[in-house]
Image (cartoon, rainbow, N blue to C red; front, top):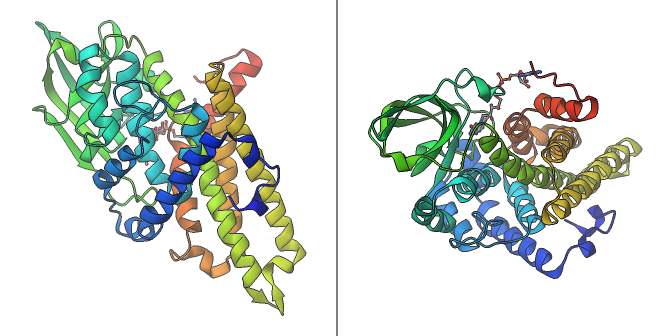
Length: 387
Ligand code: FAD
C-alpha cells in the first residue's frame, strides 16, 4: 500500500520473503489484471484458464500446501497474495481460493495417495481446474440438510442431486462434491466429464462478474469406490475446508478496501470543488481518516490471524471474527469511497463500484456475515442459536 496508508508501519513487520512475495503478486496484478479487469467485469467473461496457468507459474495455487508441486508458503505469505489479488478483483482471489483452499486442500487433507498424485500437481500448475460443491439450490447456510445423495451399488457409488453457486464449475476438470450417504456426509472427487455430470453457467450476476459461477447437476453419476475421499468423515470435513478459504478472504477483503481507498485518496487530492481539492474539506478528511483507521485495523487483524495460523494456533471462530469484520468494513469503505468520487464513483472507469458489488458476494459466500455472528455468539455464550 502507499506509504501514507500504512499508518501503523505494518510493512516493516513483514519478513523480507513476505514482502517479496507480496510485491511479485502486486506486479502480476498490475501487469496482467488491472489493464483488463474492467472489461472482463463488464462483459462477464474472464480468461480464467489462462490466468490459472499464470497464477500456477508463480506458485499461487495451493500456495500454503506442501508437496505435490505446491509452494509450501507461510499462512501470512498466502494471505498477502490474497490481499494483492483482491486489490485487483475479488473474482481473481476467488479463483485462487477455490482452487487452492477448497478443491486442493480437500484432496490434500482428505484424499488418498492416488487422488493426490492424480490431481494436485496439475492443479498446482493451473493445468487442471477444481471446484468445490457444497451449496445446493435449497440448502446454503445449512449444509447439514443437503439432499445430494451418494448410494452404494456394488463397489460403485451413484450420486444424484444438484449443487448451486459453484465457483469455477463450468470450467472445472474435477469437482469435490459433498453428498449424504447412509453413514453421513462424505466427499467425492468427481471428474467433470463423468457421464451424468452437467455444469451450467449462472448468468446475470451483478457481482463477481470476473469469476465463473455455475450449477452442477448430478444425474445418476456412477463413480468407482476410489472416488471417495477416504479421510473425509462427516460435515466437519467440508467445514474445515471453508475455514481455510475464509482465512484468505480475511486478507483479500482488505485488498479490495485498500484499492478503493488508494483510488479515492488520489481522486480527492486532485479533484477541485469550491476552489479547493475535495481532500481539503474537513468532511472529506473525516471520511478518509475513519476509512484508513478501519483499513489498518483490518490489516492488523489479518496479520495477527496469519501469525496464529503459522503457529498452528488458529481456531475457526477466530477466522469468523476476521471474515465478519474485514468483509463488513471493506464493504463500508467501498461505499464511502464511492460517495467521495461523486458520479465518477458509479463509473466502471474507476474500480470502486466493481469492488463494492463484488464484496456483496464476499459478504455472503463462505458463511454469511449472520452465520459468522452466530459462530462468534456461540463462542461467547456457549449457546448455539443456529436453529
Ligand atoms: P441462505 O442460507 O438461504 O441465507 C439467506 C439469508 O438468511 C442470509 O442473510 C443468511 O445469513 C440468513 N440466515 C440463514 N440461516 C440463518 C440463521 N440460522 N440465523 C440467521 N440468519 C440466517 N458455494 C459452494 O459450495 N461452492 C462455491 O464455490 C461457491 N461459490 C459462490 C460464489 C458466489 C458468487 C456466490 C454468491 C455464492 C457461492 N457459494 C458457493 C454459495 C454460498 O456459500 C452461499 O450462497 C452461502 O452459504 C449462503 O447460502 P444461501 O445463498 O443459500 O443463503
